Length: 310
Image (tube, rainbow, N blue to C red; front, side, top):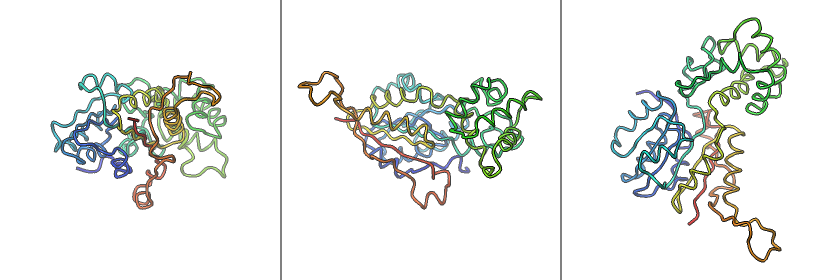
């Protein structure tokens, strides 16, 4: 079996989760099962509940995790649907959870999925869940210009968004844009020559992918909810790969780690806030130099870890 997806910072994730004997863990994006395998291998009494929207990922993970039969269940679901998944699994509280918010190597490398700006004639798809109706082709060809501009600015932090959208709208008036290569060509023509490097389409492709998959929708509420499902001392580990996700995680963790926010002049607390977690790492953990050399996709990864207070 070839490598479906190379998991990032496996040792750091396992250390961050601080695996407990008999513990129940949740892997929100099982991918090829790399992190899940490490969790199950860490202790023979551990159980795992995992989710993924991608049917390819689930097939691969089930094969990879076969040695641990009876100790794991995988659900085809967005991790944001954790409440119904855990209810179906009969799980109320968790000893730890992992959210790997990155796109998998398999999704990027499979040209027909349409995620990569290098994919040439591949269709503009970008769906992590092929049951979903919204595709990148729909976004590119049918979204109003002002909505495209917002997406590129907010989700891609793209400096040249106005020029890209202007040229994209003009081009789609001549005919529908249907391939990754066609979109990339429009982007490259829209960027000033001195900024027209190999990966100049990356931010636009990222922005459209986030829109297609609703990656940021409800993320804050999901992190809060999952963290409140942790048992005392339970751990939360979240891997992010771009600043938009990391800002959300950082903000939630900071807020949940704060106690009373009443002015110091107040004789008693009236806000009612209580500290829910403690931060294990004030700054995010990043991949080591060796891993970054072996897997360049790890260079943008940030791991934040929190512990549920007793």
